[in-house]
Length: 133
Image (tube, rainbow, N blue to C red; front, side):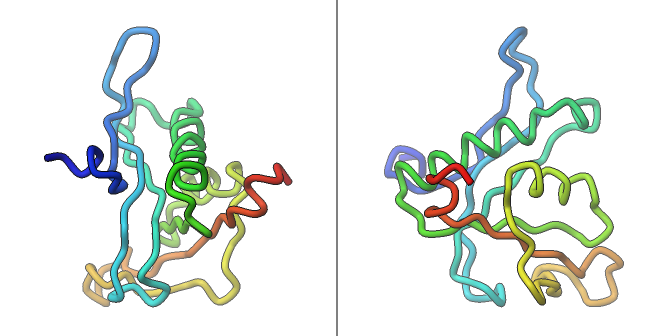
């Protein structure tokens, strides 16, 4: 049985509506206590470079957040990215997510010497999302 069939959040294949081209993956992921803000629900996206800057990540992540807050009744959803990844941070901002004060953290799956180990954390709250503000 696939996780999505039992209600567990997963990353879904993202396809372009017009021609069915595979753009990448977008969805939700449960994070454990190895994250400083865990356990938590994450929204994330991984698109092929050819599809960057076209609004696909924002559109698909918005649908994933609607699902998280509507169907899963999640109180909040987090997103994070390496400090240098300003494009993903811009998606978080376009979604209306808020930067968590003091939200820089070392990703637990990366070595501290990895240049991309430090990440920035954003959050979306259900009450704010559903109010549309």
